[in-house]
Image 1: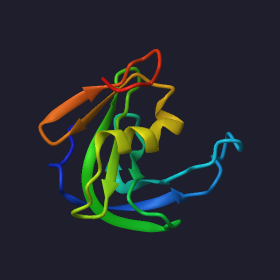
Image 2: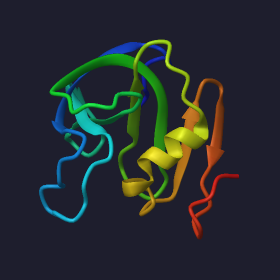
Image 3: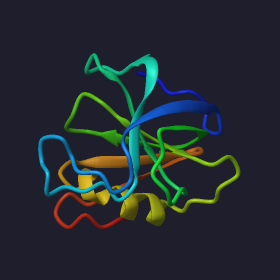
Length: 126
C-alpha cells in the first residue's frame, strides 16, 4: 500500500488512548495514542493503524499530519505516524515512542525523502 505525501492531514479514530491497556495483553500499556484511519484499509484487511505522537493527553479522535511511516519488513502492514501539523519529531523520538510495540518487528522508518533502519538485534538506530 502506498501512503499519502508526508505532511498530508489525516483524521484518526483513537481506539487505544494514551494510558490504556492492550485488549489482549493487559500488561502492555500504551504510552502514546494509537488508532486507525476510518475507511482506509491496509494490506491486512483492517483499517490503517496510526501512532499519534506529540500529544500528551488521551484522545478519541485526532487530525494531524503524516510525519512518518514505520515499514515492517516482517509483517504485512505498515504503521503510520501522525503528529500535530508543524511538529518537529526526530527519528530518535519516533523510534523511542513506538518501541513498546515495534521492538518485536524488523522495521525501517520512512520520513521525508529518507529512510533509516533499526538494528534487529538491539533495537538501535543506524
